[in-house]
Image (cartoon, rainbow, N blue to C red; front, top):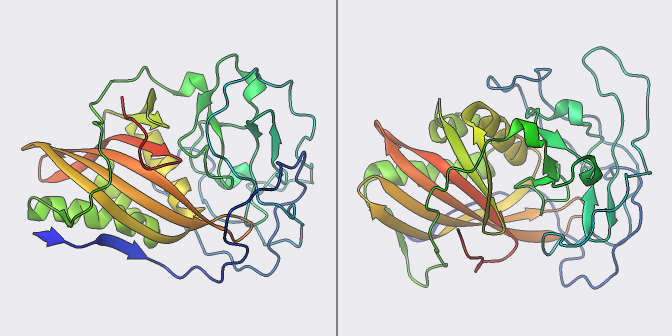
Length: 306
């Protein structure tokens, strides 16, 4: 069954300032901005083991920097000292946010995140995130590192050694993307639905109920996550990102039970600038459906997997 193209799109609102960004990185960004934006309801996540509920805070009239933050690669230099621009403390209520967040970018290293809304880490489902790289000698990069609206790191104690699933070396195809069988077509449709429609049922189809999923960042194998933690992480990424288009750009059948997939994710960042990140998946046929056994994110199409 052929699909040309396998993609989905969603009109998330108007864009502004689209184009090359040459402005220098700001030092400190105060306030998750976007007072006129309307936040969707995230609902609840049955896989969550943290705080429950899940959802967005109220929009604020906080001001982002005039210059969008552009994240083009992983940092390689020395980790900066602890972040001094600590989140703004408020008076928490039971089950409600405990502080507001603002991001910072020091020496190429991300701290915290920039939200579309007044969103606190209380509303993320995954309990693995870390926001300050100086808390670890060797931080674990989140697959959301290239998304300024999402947490940049994961706690090392919450991860597992990488399982070295073969993620292949899959470049975008010039021709049509063809699903080799109806079951594969359903899996590809679910990949699109979870990003374009924030479809938790689609995530449930794709995330296995047990075992682990390997995570790659910029083509490098980083660690494995337990299936339940990966479900929560994927839920956080899909719900808390303004996706405008999601397209499968390459597909390879490794054998009768394994697919390698590359997809292009187009989204609006917190400054309403359109960005593109590439995802890679290894899908394994287990029972009557394909499930994700590796997931990677990269800032450009040709990153080498391994």
